[in-house]
Amino acid sequence: MSRTKSEPLQVIKQRRDAALNSLVSAVPYISFLGIEFDRRGDELTAVLPFDEMLIGNPMLPAIHGGVTAAFLEITAMIGLSWSVLWSEIESGKVELPAIPRLPKTIDFTVDYLRTGLPRDAYARVRVNRSGRRYASVYVEGWQDNRQRMFAQATGHFLMPQKG
Image (cartoon, rainbow, N blue to C red; front, side):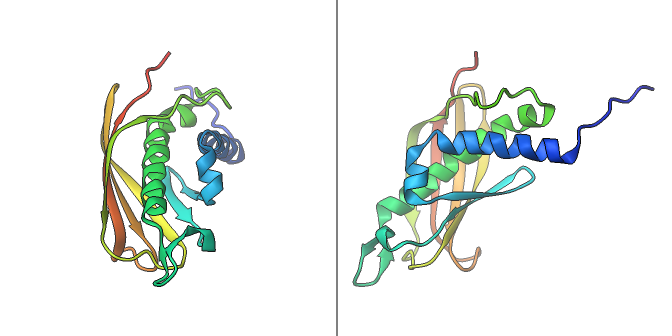
């Protein structure tokens, strides 16, 4: 039985990081809001570091609802793309920096569960269905305690055509 020599871990990590950076850099609004992605294996957590410019209601103060919605939608798009690309990234088939186009939003519904406090926020996506043409996702957003979400969302996306 012949066994292919596996790649060094550092090469695999560099390919994963390069793929994620290519996805993130494709959306300038991500850097404007300061959103970062924490990658642990195939799992991504989006991080929205608190900044005063994110406040919508200074009387509370609370993170602006549009910022919350954008944060969750960006998490959905990047997380969905990441899940689709994962096997190609791992096999080395993905050509960097030529990352496929991002999915296009069909609809996106946000449920505001409580006030977004003036602190860092986190979000993760769960891909419910991902086919060649259509995908459905669920996103949870929390701040201090993952069990106490401040917002959640469901979205449907048109997947980019390959080739």
